[in-house]
Image (cartoon, rainbow, N blue to C red; front, side, top):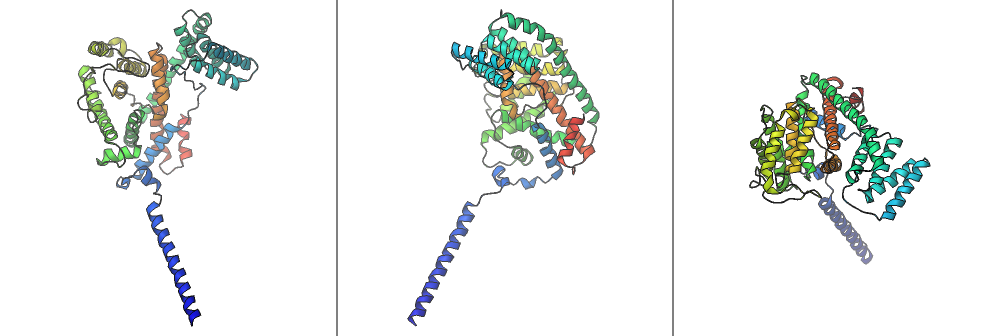
Length: 437
């Protein structure tokens, strides 16, 4: 009998332990269960926006923008921040790069030329030799020409750079002209498709992408789904700061204002201040729509003193509405309008967003869709602006031209896949539409 009691007691103890373990496991799993991807990324009831077709358009347009573009041009960025090497280090690196070039080891030569340009960004010999390498080995005349110009900026009498520049200048001018012709042909093609019923859907989703990338360049961390939810419902997005909410709301108001300004013939101080007031009105109501009254620094660039801003803005507006400016190709005109304003830097904050909106206002007036600078293009965008500050604005104009091509391709793709390929077609098949153009 005693043995039976002991056995029963042991069994009861084992059962209690098992129950305790199961209970512990259940609560731990419940407390620390990893949330779904939707909850991690969104953290708000996105299911209230129930339009599967529009979701698909948004996803696919964003995918097109993310597709790597085929190009013969080498991705090259010269860092203007000085990371200087010793004279001997620069000389040895340059000589090694030339030796690898002559021996046919192009990849190793490229790495050494890149390193030489990084440690000696103002060395005319390095810049000139690097340009020659890109021109001869990669047939990249445009980047080579930019390097020759940089070399002459630091050493105006550099004979080799002068000779190279004389040869490449007319070639690059022809390529730039061809680029603008390509933009015009795609614009004309898109214009024929604007009457499609599907175009409104494409424009609506492109609108969200525009806001997403524009505020994203400035550091806003909202996803495109989150800002879309904010704008469509007016409800707060959990986990995002008040400033990020206000940046999105302010830009949305400014873009609506731009639509009204498209109908006007004159862009004046009042209109520019009105754009900035809407961009920054939610973030900083006191400084919004007011010229700065303090000195500012933009990296290594020092904008004009604040007491010169009113006069400079008067000159800017005069140029903006001049026959000279308006007779340019619209893309060049828009790019220069952007650069000239951001160079003056008339506001304490919001200069980039205001400049990009004025750029798009000019493009909209000329019949182009508004362009967007992608978050992923941030480094190239700022590098082109730095190069313009050094005296060569052509790379920035080309950057804006490439962004224009990019947005035209996105719209062409969007209207084609909605009207021809159909929503239910496979994504890989739909991506062929741009290549066919």
